[in-house]
Amino acid sequence: MSAIKDILLATLFLGFLYYFLLFVGLKYTTAGNASIISLTEAFFSFLFFNIWKKEHLSVEHIAGCVLLVLGALIVLLPSGTKIHTGDILVLVAAAIAPFGNFFQRRARAKVSSEVIMFIRSIIVSVLVFSIAIFSAPHISLFGDIKTSIIFFFINGFILLGLSKVFWIEGIHRISVTKANALSSVSPLLTIFFAWLILKNVPTIWQFYSFVPLFIGILLLTGKAKANQPELIN
Image (cartoon, rainbow, N blue to C red; front, side, top):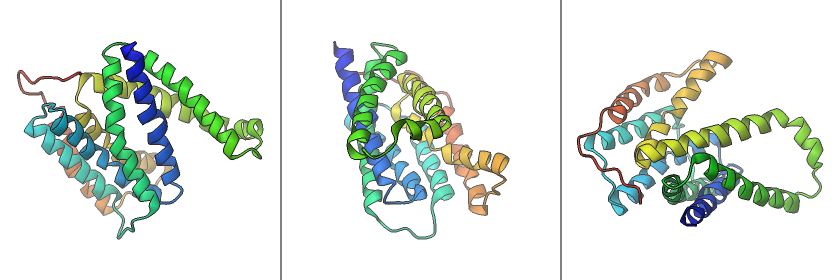
């Protein structure tokens, strides 16, 4: 029963509140701003797990966190930004994510990732479906689903399915702070595949970001110090 409680709390923070704030925030800010602000999740995770929960993180890993966030900021930071309502909503989403990851990680110590995602997906699907029907009753549900089926598949199976299983397995084995910092490399991967597939040539600032990102990855993926404790509450 303790696993169910942790799964329900993780679902509340991550499956519902996080994505609700994120998607609503995207209505009022740019995708670039949202990506930049989302990087603060690594900072909030550091405060939660390493300051509050006293989880050990080596100096090398802290330096790696800083360098990865710095590299991602170089990739994404536009010339001058304004604070919008959407920015605040995305910031709040990043701040509550560590709470969800805490309960999700604790649940993974008791049950498998598949069980966590199964329960989480059922609950969130019912909630989101109900909100969609209530807020937009005029929409032709099945017609819209038919025209967007390929995007539903990619988003559901890969982005909100397979990637989440990998994430849960990852934070079961390494610290959430380290995992969040490693995920900051995603803007670099996005730029690479946009260059490869869409022929969008990277800017000079994006090339500069390779230096801190590469060093940060080396620091984070290096061998941990001996006798480093791994906290699973």
